[in-house]
Length: 86
Image 1: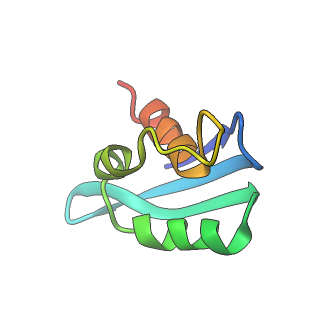
Image 2: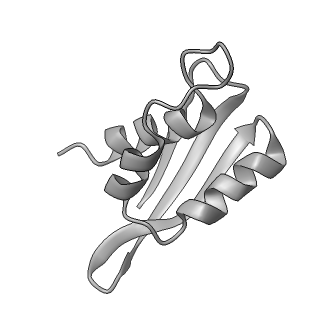
């Protein structure tokens, strides 16, 4: 499944997420951020690859960037939560 999420309150403006089925379970296949700190965001994408969306949400939800109320990792958690809503 492919999903796009417009971020709010961060330097990145868009997150593109692709999930795949591995061993009968939905996991993250690819994550791409548009804008923001390119190296850091590539790192986040690499670290979450192969993880279940629920695990990524648990790890990244609520992280903040400096004085901002959110961060790119927090926005990824929000995107995944929205994407996996029943």
